[in-house]
Image (cartoon, rainbow, N blue to C red):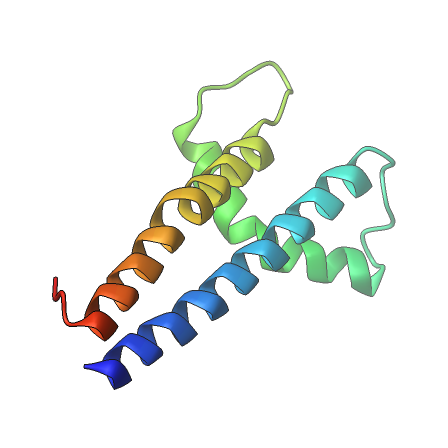
Length: 103
């Protein structure tokens, strides 16, 4: 069972790192959107391409707020929830598998 536990720990670390990176990408996109960036800039295009699929889905769920876009805030809160709730639970599951506690 220790191999499964190590795989879970490895996947959990990767998930945590990816979520942290995505958090910062969303923050950077939100900050850049305040200054009306050049849409042809490759960095701006990359930020929009990587965040728009998630932010667009959240925008469709949220009601119109008169031009105020809170979708980045909602996605950041979801990332925080996953990092504070699900990631530690996966670590705990892996530790229990290592010690023989099972599911």
